[in-house]
Length: 176
Image (cartoon, rainbow, N blue to C red; front, side, top):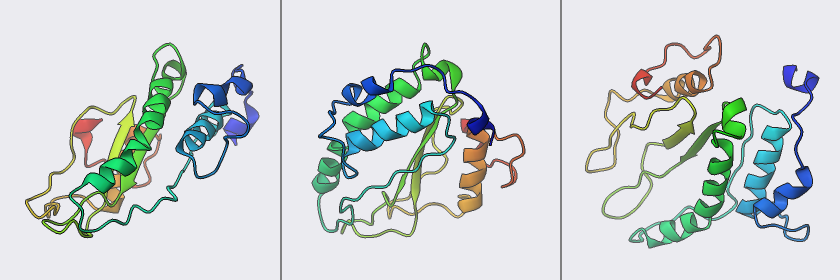
C-alpha cells in the first residue's frame, strides 16, 4: 500500500531494455535478459517483491555437471548485470534494500547427479555478509542442525529489514 502511494523516482524506462541488450522485438517471457529487465523495472516502480521462474529444463540426471554449467551460462551474464545495477552505491544500492535470492535443487547426489533431499539458497543483499549457513557432507546432505524453511524465511526477513519478523529469531545472524 505504501509503495502505491509514493511516486517512483525519475527514470528513463525506455532505456532499460537497451541496458539489458534487448529491443522491442526481443522481449520474451522465456528470455533471462527480459526477466531481469522486468524485475528491475518493477523494483524501480516501487514493488517490494519480484519472483521469476525458469522455464528451462533444469531437471538433469547422470551428467558430469557440464549440462548444469551450460544452463547457468545462460543466466549468469544477465544476473551479473542485474546485481551490478541493484547494488551500485551511486544508484539503487544507495536508495533501495534489494535482496536477491536464488533457490533451487542445486544439491545433487554423488556419484549419479540425482535428486537430493535438500534445497539450497544463495542470498545476495546490502546487509548480507559473505558466508555460508550450512555445509553439506560427502553425500550432499545438510547436517541435522540446519534450520528448516522457517529459518530460511526468518533469515530473508532479517536481510530485508522487516520490522517485525513473523518467522521468529534469525538462525543465521552471522551472515546478516
